[in-house]
Length: 225
Image (cartoon, rainbow, N blue to C red; front, side):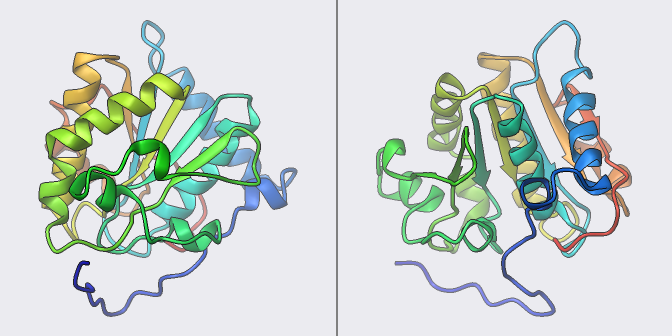
């Protein structure tokens, strides 16, 4: 349906779900610490949405998003992980599922959201893959349909975690993704957070400060994006 988006110097493949496979490891404990820090980052309003990004590809954002989603699911919260990196998606590799349907098909073809939700082997965790890579990711991420989908997910899940494009590699995509999260959250549930992998993210994130309530930049070991 969509043309393929060729990329260079980037290896797309499964990310390690260390929180699930090695729950007692120091790295898994760090992910749980990030989860706890997010939960306490806004005392007055419960954080319902976390957008995970990085400055550049290869910094570990997709690994962070997947493991953070597992950490939330393990805490008993009904969690959905959304792959909004419509240029270089990885969630379907990580959880070993098909990607014929996902975000792009739901937005473009009006596929009901319940038809794109995929269950995982992790209790309390569902995923939404990217779907076929579209030629216009920015427009899809900032569309009213995207905002409506986020609203729908918030009604059915305790936590919505979004794996977005890198800030500096495709700033337009990430800015529109953050804006979509902000518009939806401002109308429904004000609590939202942008979680960025370090190595430049803290310098790139301030551009979005008017659209989100808080930022979390976890100091985790270097990971594959």
